[in-house]
Length: 282
Image (cartoon, rainbow, N blue to C red; front, side):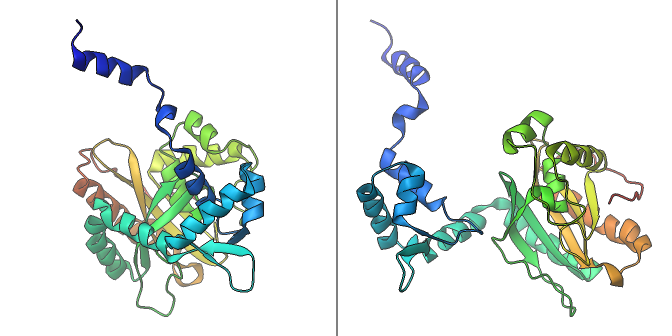
């Protein structure tokens, strides 16, 4: 008789992961993913049509999500919006990340050294998600909130994260060549984005001048862990009119790179920090 443990292991290897999917749970999570920054409200009939499942099933799923606080009914409307339960899960996720505790004092020091707001982001698909923020004490301060999502290709924070990916990985994320533009500098196609990322890849950092928002500049640098992959990005933001370019490409850039290198070290990255020669990287 064959060894029972080996037989079970063999069955596990041959089983498709799809076999263990719970359809009801999968549908409920798909409903939650129908909400985004452009569509904050949605009705049950629309969900049923888009997911291709019966209205009665959608109604029960949405009632369950409403009961658990993940969505809520919009007053005087047949629509639903995300509830506080989703937000609490998001904060619990952020709190569970080791990098958040390690990064906080580093970001605060970066803010104090430069006088500018500093941020830490991670990538989720084609978005960057802000997980920590150290707000500047000046009259100009970042309006970004924790949990804010921005398009990765439209921000320098996203660019330094995407620069760690291969062309094949980028093709998976961006199935279409055409990309939405947010300024004159935003690449309009995946091909143009790849050319920008090739340059960012060489530096390990990126500098922008109104790349995403008019009048606002930013410097972003990569954070790596012991896998040597880029897991996060750090930046500072400032008003272009108030900062000299020589400082942007010199002392401020050096401070951002120092902070990114320090956090990478804390995340057990054993690579040698990149030395840099200030280069216009707009």
